[in-house]
Image 1 (cartoon, one colour):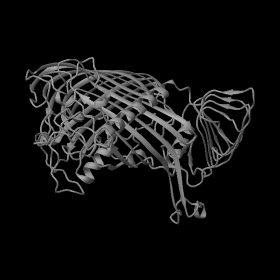
Image 2 (cartoon, helix red, strand yellow):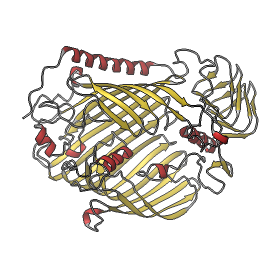
Image 3 (cartoon, one colour):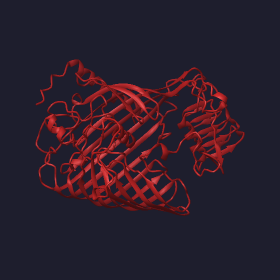
Image 4 (cartoon, helix red, strand yellow):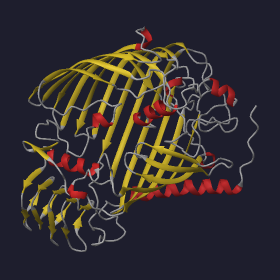
Length: 609
């Protein structure tokens, strides 16, 4: 039996309300703030534009090469002068020259191994990046975006008009940047070729997990290009390594995708897919890399899984890499997956968390998704919006419904509507400071209660790191919506049970640089830098607050009317801070809405959001 929770101290409740109020005020201020150029609290000075010493960060090198290789960028080799009455529309990249800007550039300026003179009449409506040179500018430069100056030069090779890894390379990566495929083992390799080709492909497409092990995808893929029309096809067999390399039905699957695309930067896509694939619950939280490495290294899996077998067709409208509207309809069979005895490096003798049982049956799913990305840089966002929205309508017959799910009867016919919205705002306050905000809201909209695998939980490293992953607190847990004793809840695998959830997050970030024992690159070669320690990153202060609740079924303290949001005093809130180094971060978080919990120290292998 779990002892009843002790009364919440007044000081703890006050801290919770204060933290939530600060979050609300910050989000309101950001929404009403003007564009980044006007939102700065003070004008840029020469000190803000001081050269950054040390090696050129990998992400800056990748960004420079991406801008140079972009089809719409105006590329200049050597000196470049823009007169006061002239305007360049779009991005400008200059390689190995002297740059004088007296006119207007409507995009960003990327000066590679070049120095820049920005006169008082010069105006850059995007960002200004100087690599391997110096910047001369007035005290109040007319630059709407970021100003970045790196003393280190960019080392590169050329392939035609592109910067590339080496003279024989076909890709567009700088020599000091490894490929995405090599560094991110659990993601698809992105093929940017514009020619017709076919190949036999071997890869992994899912994170290492406790129900599949490492799923291996093998088969042909091909592309045909005719002007602005592309035809893509993939036919993959799936082998799930599981707890042994056995050729059996549970370890086999398939994925077949055919797609026609009309247009390059903007246009329409239409396609279909056949699949026998394992899907995950709550993919809006941790990234695939973090899930896979936590599973492989420490016997910790922070997702739940079920099997989807069926077919679907879709059509989408897209504009650039960041904006897409997509509609999909399909019929599929849902079934449960059991946790396997997969191998991990540490704690290999620990028993895996039970994979919660899923509702099973044949479902017809209509899904509408929208994505709008106005961030200045998807990898290192300093300003802009990111919106991801999904609306799902499901109808069908469940042959096996989980009776442990609260707020649902045993009737198996089901028809439901579910939504999920993830909205993020990145605000540049100064050259090295940001205020970033995120709001995630999702859950039941109408119809029957949600199936087991379409529910939510608000706990753990990504959502509320001050609270342990799906650990219940009291008889009516607002993080998981569990009403069971903790031992019974653990025996079910600690499933996510909430029909609705709401989470708000805010973080304040500032850049820092550590240089111990000097900045020199011996002999001008980056490989000879082991005689000193250096690091570039950001310090982070953050606050998170949210909870889940139920809207259907027998009334309990977790139930709220469909038109109500739980009172703020019932939300869970935590505060914390740490250091973000880009590819990984180290943080500590402390719960403030409840007493008696120890701070949590944790590592992220990606930015918080």
